[in-house]
Length: 208
Image (cartoon, rainbow, N blue to C red; front, side, top):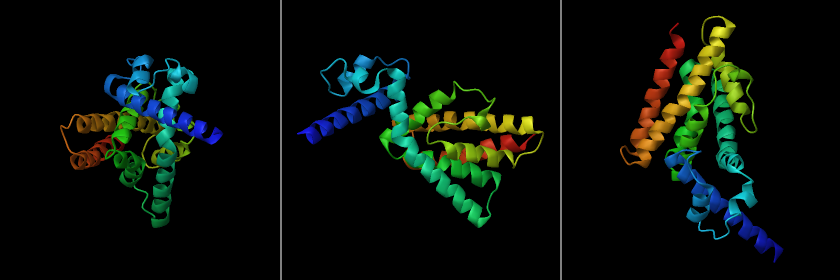
């Protein structure tokens, strides 16, 4: 009986997360009323969101945690492969950093996650990007350090350029995800555009 209750609670939590990521991707993180999340998830209990996540930020963290463990692990594997092959160019590193997000474009939940990450990235600052650490994001720190080693200039200039790239990439990837959601482009076309984004950012990092 206890296991059934736990399973039902987990199912409710999953429904709330999926409803929230869909609504927040479409309307914006702060624009979504938590009551609308509860209704979209098919939950009659008005305190369901507060019970499972406490508040909006807790709900957003749950959305991000749903995806970023797998994203983090995949990025580490790609970076490991590059190190073994000796292919640590600027573009190959950017591709390794972006591929886990590109792979998510084929899944509606994944696209919504990419859009939400893009919105959150827009609130950050370039300063201190290399030092920033959160749970299950150590692959990002690893990637940032490797990128900084492959651009020219002073340490401050290199870190600033990496920071600009780190903030630009999620924004452009989110734009691609939105276009797919609106059915303006296909997933295949979206993934081709990811290649254009990588080239755009790489050129910006190379130029003084």
